[in-house]
Image 1: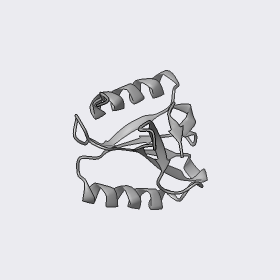
Image 2: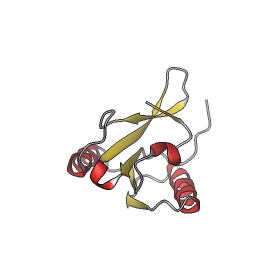
Image 3: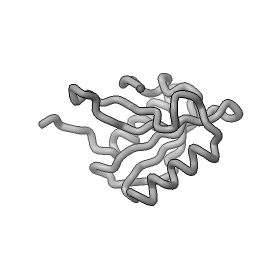
Image 4: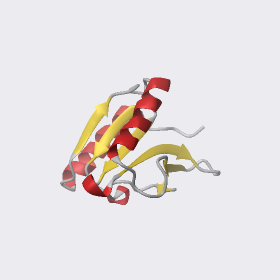
Length: 111
């Protein structure tokens, strides 16, 4: 079994990474500190938003899925998706990054 990083620690590392890159970030909702799922909302302002969630690939590698689709969506649509997920699972972490580029702060594969 592969050891996994606790969600709260992963979020803290993301905040630090964004701080070092001078990218604004806010934790919108705190989830389970040990094993809560993570949603990342990348807000590019007028250009739209993208929401990513953690997933595992076929070989078990960590990757991120664009759950709002391949193109940016309106912020209201991104927020509605997040609200639906939070209703289903209140242990989800939600962080909003004020950047249109997920690649600027995510090292893992994005699909």
